[in-house]
Image (cartoon, rainbow, N blue to C red; front, side, top):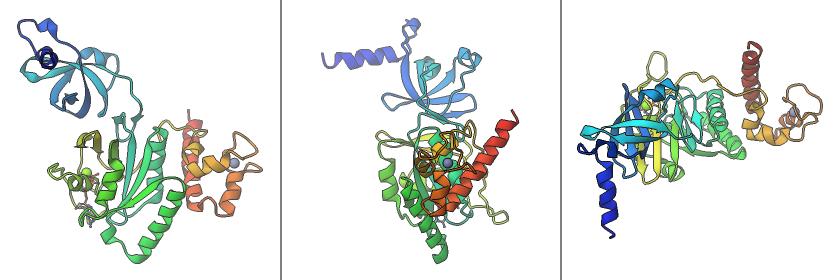
Length: 319
Ligand SMILES: Nc1nc2c(ncn2[C@@H]2O[C@H](COP(=O)(O)OP(=O)(O)OP(=O)(O)O)[C@@H](O)[C@H]2O)c(=O)[nH]1
Ligand SMILES: [Mg+2]
Ligand SMILES: [Zn+2]
């Protein structure tokens, strides 16, 4: 009896030329999309190359890597994606769905460390409801003064509740710690081009052979080596998503009322402001401004908040 059930399931899973109507809906996770083909990983860990049912596109449903889908098998072991399950969350950049954790990767040098860009990455992840881990890579390139500055920033992030890891992908430093943070989750590795996202993944799981490339000597920036978003299995129940790096990141879909909630320290102190709608700019009895004055909120984080708020307000006024 024990043997019958799995083998019966298996026969239903296969395309049956005699009873083609006997196809059943299977479930899987979209792990890669390229050129109209979609690679879906099924329950057994097998990869099935699928196309998408035309109806889905007609309904305006766009698939994202990470999506849970239902599909049927056709001949030659291929499949057709029939439908899309509701998403737990989705990110606009990188375009991925159903992710649990964002690892915001920045290099200490080459490309130069840009803290407002890091905060934009963190805010985008917060807005999507992801937990956030910060990883400073290329530890080997850092001078003493720089390292001190980054360590001070790391303390500020720690106080906000974010874990911070220091890594050096080329010398295999910090990789075990990074692995621990990734364990049992679907993680998206995100950050500017050239910071070492693909290099880190190659080191975490040898054999991945993801393409990497040195940054441009002329511009000091990455070369946008990774072109597509891919979900890679690292261990059981642990996935990493390698994503193309960026140089800019605008905050899509975040309103000026929401923004303060995505800065944990501003949300914390802001709950004591006189006005419940306080945006912490020049309102009276603002607890956030007081906290900045006495150093309970880092002035650079507050400055980043104001820059982002200004951009969002400008967009809101132009609607
Ligand atoms: N010195 C040093 N170089 C590193 C380290 N990690 C990665 N690199 C180098 O940085 C360059 C860029 O690495 P990639 O892994 O391609 O960067 P990426 O973040 O995937 O870039 P995109 O795919 O363009 O977004 C490569 O030449 C790597 O060898 C590190 O810890 N130290
Ligand atoms: Mg890459
Ligand atoms: Zn306030």
